[in-house]
Amino acid sequence: MKKKLFAMTSALMVLLCCFAGCSNSIYKHYDAAKYDEQFAEPEKGDTMARFVTNMGEFTVRLFPEAAPKAVENFVTHAEEGYYDGVIFHRVIEDFMVQSGDPTGTGSGGESIWGEEFEDEPVPYLGTYRGALCMANRGTNTNGSQFFIITSDDTEVNDYKRWNMDVDDKYKVDEAKLDKFEEVGGAIYLDYQLSNLRAVRYPDTYTQYVHTVFGQVIEGMDVVDAISQVKTYTEDQVTEAKILNGMDQTEVMENKPEQDVIIESIEIYTYGE
Image (cartoon, rainbow, N blue to C red):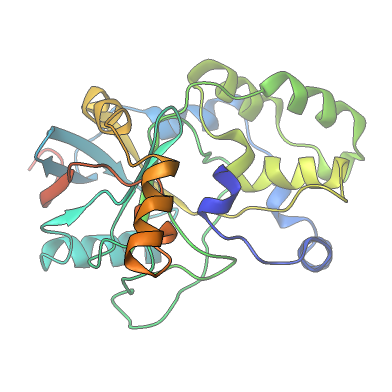
């Protein structure tokens, strides 16, 4: 169900060959302290985003040094009011909330450059609970849509076991796995760990890449509340399809019955 959400179409073997051809750059290693940086308290000069929604406010610390294009795209859109009035069109309890599409259908929106832009995966950032990530429909297809992870369960023990079994060149830092165990998250969406799983089970799993470009640092209770709103049921989606004579699945599946709206996003510099 969740894997359908992002429509990942890239072939596994092509991705593995690409990674092998770049000296396994996705497996850079860091000290354990590096994995705490995503959750550090904001410091003076940090770029922040305050989301004002019809269900409350929450604040995100952005990572312009790690994901410069994703942050520039998001900040520019926010400052120009592109996201004002946009709904959370896809909501899945205990997984994520997704927005950023002005059409509200899940198939619209574009980047500030008018074209898709590349992924910016960073090994020490992860798809942890509270992470702000770019949504896409495959590798290097980023536009305007984003999602925030709400999951607090990770299946981390499986990944720790696989990490022990694979060749050293595919091993992920234990500190990253420990951080998932500590804070939760969508572990299978993490580009290092989804690749680890794909290497372990090459005939079953696919590599996922979603740029992490921010972290919720205040108001996670509001994000959780958004993730728990009532959404259209499968029967309602099917009935709408029959009545309208057209496929409403992509429009209605996992969409809240009552709109959850981004009223505004304020970009500011912390401490100023």
